[in-house]
Length: 194
Image (cartoon, rainbow, N blue to C red; front, side):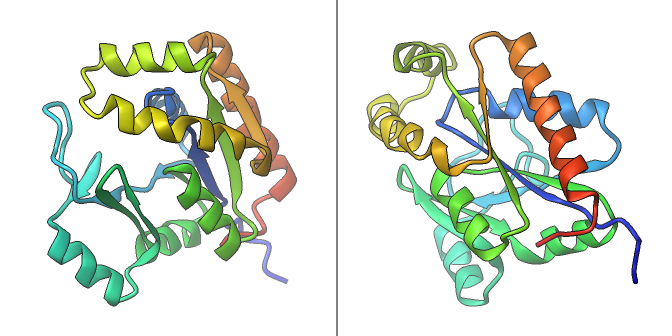
């Protein structure tokens, strides 16, 4: 029997602007047993983002060719832009024994759960829809109305996630987020992956 630790696929999801990246970045800075999966996207790069670190930025033609090649574990069209999770990168990291954390939309998270039953899902919930809209406005988002139309749909699906973390206070939310990952690790005991 192989007792070597295998990584766990942890999917973090929730509405745009809820604070997923903030929680993930803090966790990864403190944890040496996890890696972040960089997704592909066709949306424009924001000023603070780096290609290959935040996303692999590409054009729609290249993205569609990658779909045809079976490159993605999952992909979605979100707010008119394509996003996809690279299959080979995920599998390579899991085989090293590191857990891998994905930051993807709610539909993509549920798609991964269907393909990888051993994956674990964490939903980050906003304190309110109004607060979420304010956060999006503060960070200068342009497609606010489009994003807000999806919020209620996404929140309605939170019951399909194993864990929900309310992000009304960053310190409390981070403690709950870290606790959820620690519980996932105890439950999985590093024996299963995708």
